[in-house]
Figure 1 (spheres, helix red, strand yellow):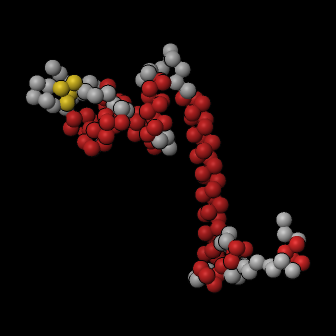
Figure 2 (figure 1 turned 135 degrees about the vertical axis):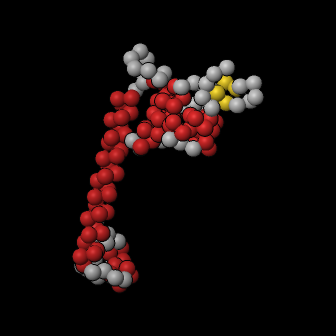
Figure 3 (figure 1 turned 180 degrees about the horizontal axis):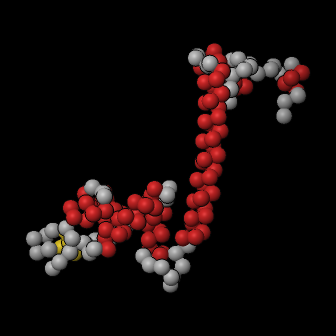
Amino acid sequence: MTGLRSGQVAGAAGVNLQTLRYYERRGLLAAPARSLGGHRLYPPEAVTVLKVIKATQRLAFTLDEVADLLATGGHRHGGQESGLQERARAKLAEVEAKIADLQVIASTLRETVAAGCDDLVTCAGEPCCPIPFATIAAPSPAPEDPAYRARP
Protein backbone atom coordinates (compact mmCIF):
# COMPACT_ATOMS: atom_id res chain seq x y z
CA MET A 1 0.00 0.00 0.00
CA THR A 2 1.42 3.41 -0.97
CA GLY A 3 0.65 6.93 0.05
CA LEU A 4 1.97 9.82 2.06
CA ARG A 5 2.28 9.54 5.81
CA SER A 6 0.81 12.19 8.09
CA GLY A 7 4.07 14.05 8.64
CA GLN A 8 4.76 14.18 4.91
CA VAL A 9 1.31 15.56 4.12
CA ALA A 10 1.39 18.08 6.95
CA GLY A 11 4.87 19.27 6.00
CA ALA A 12 4.05 19.58 2.30
CA ALA A 13 0.87 21.55 3.07
CA GLY A 14 2.45 23.74 5.73
CA VAL A 15 0.19 22.64 8.59
CA ASN A 16 0.92 20.78 11.81
CA LEU A 17 -0.24 17.26 12.58
CA GLN A 18 -2.96 18.44 14.95
CA THR A 19 -4.45 20.59 12.17
CA LEU A 20 -4.32 17.66 9.76
CA ARG A 21 -6.17 15.41 12.21
CA TYR A 22 -8.65 18.14 13.12
CA TYR A 23 -9.57 18.64 9.46
CA GLU A 24 -9.96 14.89 9.13
CA ARG A 25 -12.29 14.77 12.18
CA ARG A 26 -14.31 17.70 10.78
CA GLY A 27 -14.73 15.85 7.49
CA LEU A 28 -12.79 18.41 5.46
CA LEU A 29 -10.26 15.77 4.56
CA ALA A 30 -11.26 12.21 3.74
CA ALA A 31 -10.15 9.56 6.20
CA PRO A 32 -7.00 8.01 4.78
CA ALA A 33 -6.22 4.38 4.16
CA ARG A 34 -4.10 2.61 6.76
CA SER A 35 -0.93 0.63 6.33
CA LEU A 36 -0.63 -2.83 7.82
CA GLY A 37 1.13 -1.17 10.75
CA GLY A 38 -1.79 1.25 11.26
CA HIS A 39 -0.11 4.36 9.82
CA ARG A 40 -2.30 6.80 7.94
CA LEU A 41 -1.56 6.83 4.21
CA TYR A 42 -2.92 9.85 2.35
CA PRO A 43 -3.21 10.24 -1.41
CA PRO A 44 -1.11 13.06 -2.93
CA GLU A 45 -4.32 15.09 -3.51
CA ALA A 46 -4.63 15.51 0.26
CA VAL A 47 -1.83 18.10 0.12
CA THR A 48 -3.80 20.13 -2.44
CA VAL A 49 -6.99 19.91 -0.38
CA LEU A 50 -5.13 21.14 2.71
CA LYS A 51 -3.64 24.05 0.76
CA VAL A 52 -7.11 24.93 -0.56
CA ILE A 53 -8.53 24.87 2.98
CA LYS A 54 -5.79 27.19 4.27
CA ALA A 55 -6.14 29.54 1.28
CA THR A 56 -9.90 29.84 1.69
CA GLN A 57 -9.47 30.51 5.40
CA ARG A 58 -7.10 33.37 4.53
CA LEU A 59 -9.90 34.71 2.34
CA ALA A 60 -12.09 34.91 5.48
CA PHE A 61 -14.17 31.79 4.87
CA THR A 62 -15.05 29.85 8.02
CA LEU A 63 -14.32 26.13 8.23
CA ASP A 64 -18.05 25.43 7.91
CA GLU A 65 -18.13 27.49 4.71
CA VAL A 66 -15.01 25.73 3.43
CA ALA A 67 -16.56 22.33 4.17
CA ASP A 68 -19.69 23.31 2.25
CA LEU A 69 -17.67 24.59 -0.70
CA LEU A 70 -15.60 21.41 -0.80
CA ALA A 71 -18.68 19.20 -0.56
CA THR A 72 -20.70 21.01 -3.23
CA GLY A 73 -17.76 21.73 -5.52
CA GLY A 74 -16.62 18.17 -5.81
CA HIS A 75 -13.00 19.40 -5.80
CA ARG A 76 -13.08 20.12 -9.52
CA HIS A 77 -13.80 22.84 -12.08
CA GLY A 78 -16.89 22.63 -14.22
CA GLY A 79 -19.65 20.12 -13.82
CA GLN A 80 -21.67 20.57 -10.67
CA GLU A 81 -22.19 24.21 -9.66
CA SER A 82 -20.41 24.87 -6.37
CA GLY A 83 -21.77 28.35 -5.80
CA LEU A 84 -18.23 29.67 -5.39
CA GLN A 85 -18.96 32.83 -7.39
CA GLU A 86 -22.02 33.68 -5.32
CA ARG A 87 -20.26 32.87 -2.05
CA ALA A 88 -17.17 34.84 -3.06
CA ARG A 89 -19.34 37.88 -3.86
CA ALA A 90 -21.09 37.59 -0.49
CA LYS A 91 -17.77 37.20 1.34
CA LEU A 92 -16.36 40.19 -0.56
CA ALA A 93 -19.31 42.34 0.57
CA GLU A 94 -18.79 41.15 4.15
CA VAL A 95 -15.06 41.94 4.01
CA GLU A 96 -15.68 45.36 2.45
CA ALA A 97 -18.16 46.17 5.25
CA LYS A 98 -15.55 45.18 7.84
CA ILE A 99 -12.96 47.33 6.08
CA ALA A 100 -15.35 50.30 6.18
CA ASP A 101 -15.87 49.74 9.92
CA LEU A 102 -12.12 49.48 10.47
CA GLN A 103 -11.57 52.72 8.53
CA VAL A 104 -14.01 54.50 10.85
CA ILE A 105 -12.19 53.04 13.86
CA ALA A 106 -8.80 54.10 12.47
CA SER A 107 -10.08 57.61 11.78
CA THR A 108 -11.48 57.91 15.31
CA LEU A 109 -8.21 56.67 16.80
CA ARG A 110 -6.26 59.22 14.72
CA GLU A 111 -8.58 61.97 16.00
CA THR A 112 -8.13 60.69 19.57
CA VAL A 113 -4.35 60.84 19.23
CA ALA A 114 -4.53 64.31 17.65
CA ALA A 115 -6.85 65.56 20.41
CA GLY A 116 -4.33 64.43 23.02
CA CYS A 117 -6.84 62.34 24.96
CA ASP A 118 -5.01 60.80 27.93
CA ASP A 119 -7.83 59.97 30.32
CA LEU A 120 -10.78 58.07 28.93
CA VAL A 121 -13.31 59.20 31.51
CA THR A 122 -12.26 62.85 31.41
CA CYS A 123 -12.10 62.90 27.61
CA ALA A 124 -15.51 61.25 27.29
CA GLY A 125 -17.12 64.18 29.10
CA GLU A 126 -15.51 66.83 26.87
CA PRO A 127 -17.33 68.16 23.80
CA CYS A 128 -14.14 67.90 21.73
CA CYS A 129 -13.75 64.18 22.47
CA PRO A 130 -13.62 62.25 19.19
CA ILE A 131 -14.57 58.94 20.83
CA PRO A 132 -18.16 58.07 19.73
CA PHE A 133 -19.47 57.47 23.22
CA ALA A 134 -18.85 61.10 24.19
CA THR A 135 -22.56 61.83 23.72
CA ILE A 136 -23.43 58.87 25.92
CA ALA A 137 -21.18 60.23 28.69
CA ALA A 138 -22.96 63.60 28.66
CA PRO A 139 -25.78 63.88 31.20
CA SER A 140 -29.19 63.16 29.71
CA PRO A 141 -31.73 65.99 29.85
CA ALA A 142 -34.48 65.63 32.42
CA PRO A 143 -38.05 65.05 31.16
CA GLU A 144 -39.01 68.62 32.12
CA ASP A 145 -36.06 70.03 30.10
CA PRO A 146 -37.05 71.39 26.60
CA ALA A 147 -34.03 69.49 25.17
CA TYR A 148 -35.67 66.24 26.34
CA ARG A 149 -38.80 66.91 24.27
CA ALA A 150 -36.68 67.86 21.24
CA ARG A 151 -34.94 64.47 21.17
CA PRO A 152 -35.68 62.20 18.19
